Image (cartoon, rainbow, N blue to C red; front, side, top):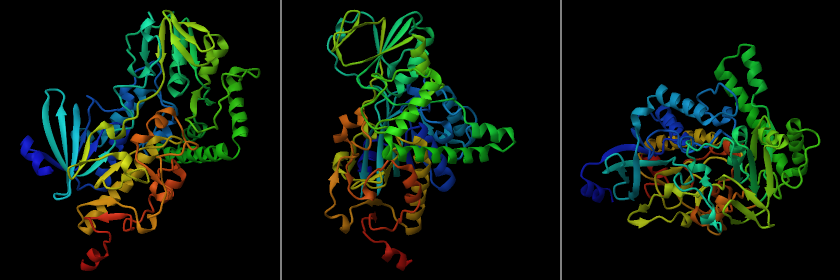
Length: 509
């Protein structure tokens, strides 16, 4: 496959590793590659004209993290600032990582990947790309593909096919496509949705809009807190250095999150009462949770929306925010009508209805000329896939910061690459072991574990999981931080150069 690509496109650029995406995953992975496998050449291919990924895509008012930056920040670079940060602050942090480590010289911006094909004969990936500035068709070859492109379509968000949308005379926009020229001052704004995006835009809209209405099909759990970390502030006060503060505060937050996650499974009703008490700190002791703030699912079956300073609830108490829990029947000329017959008039309607899932960036993949259907593969710990050699996919956590897994998989990939060098191996893939012969093959994630709509809609696009721990992405950072560093790279599930065992190679050496 590589030879054909070279013949078709002329000259190819060869590197040891191609990293796909210059977002939070790609930049972190590049750092680890430089530090832990410094002899490897690499390039980052990024379709956008700048770094940042998610934080560059989203421009809606108030855009901020919904994870604390002490754990969303990289392990290797201390975060200094409030735990919940704006997109601008996160981009500044990422820019510093790129500049401080010389990563910028490896990034090729404005490069859209059109196809990736693997050749077992050559043990090479051929990556065909288009340079968007001039339409030039370029070819890169590499020994290893590090997929850091994220998990949703950055150009096309999810918008339900609501009836009557053509009747509406006001302004309609999805939050992901927000135009910063839109002036909502003194306007009636309707936000459709109740997840993390809605929780972010509502307080921002409430500052200038005449009124904001949130229309939700079902309520969301909110975690209210001051936007500060008392431990970090105290350690700074007594003169502790920032790297130590970063390490200690990360440990504290991860411990607290672990306890919360476990309690959400063992005593969800108690946790909900505690969440209510946090809300009352900002909304007052008599705040009514029924019917608009009492979800039907267990805490943490969907993402817990962080609400710094209780800003959503302050807007509700002040009268700037109204909440309607109902389904949307149809758009009308002046707004929408719900299934119960309520008319909601609005000058601007903002859909906060989530993502369209994009597996591997929607890039067509081939292995030895055969197209890859990811749903036909079984995933190994949510990062490698049966039948697809020399490739790792970075998919982070939902219940903990995404970047914790970026750091962890950075360690793993570098250890794997270095191990292959020690064996003289050119190819590695994962394969079911003899003991996995009768293992049950199941959907990528259990609906009672984590069930946001964007995953449930497109489970048939995702790789499958096995019933054994190795063959699933368990979404449990606190288990994986022990298990992934302990992976035996000579285990039976790893096949090097098409051979099940590597013992003969070692004995020969």
